[in-house]
Image 1 (tube, helix red, strand yellow):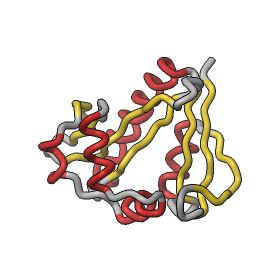
Image 2 (cartoon, rainbow, N blue to C red):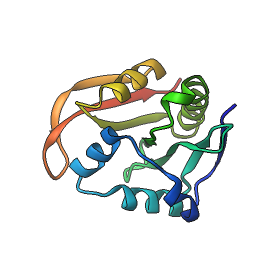
Image 3 (spheres, helix red, strand yellow):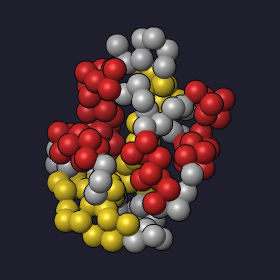
Image 4 (tube, rainbow, N blue to C red):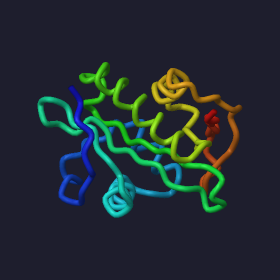
Length: 147
């Protein structure tokens, strides 16, 4: 059973991100440490496996226009070992996000195939590959509309 708990600064050393997530964050001009500090300061949450490992760190910020939520997630090397719990907990988290925001949208690196498959499984619509971010890396926009 996955537990969802607030993510705190003292959790940062216990996060072991997947290489694909490290590369995606770097292509946006940030470090994992910056992203995790943001998460700790802005209401990020963590999924914790029954063995106590951090499976993922996630959250949803309002778009500056106020018209949509911007969901984000950092998976870890432990996500695959807790696949079913992660899938169930992430589906529940996205339901809460869509209930709060009405519309969710963000971008995923086009080479992050596992994340794209997961986003499609959650019900997000995927856009075409487009240059995005300060490095104009290949990304795909994803979006979900509420009822």
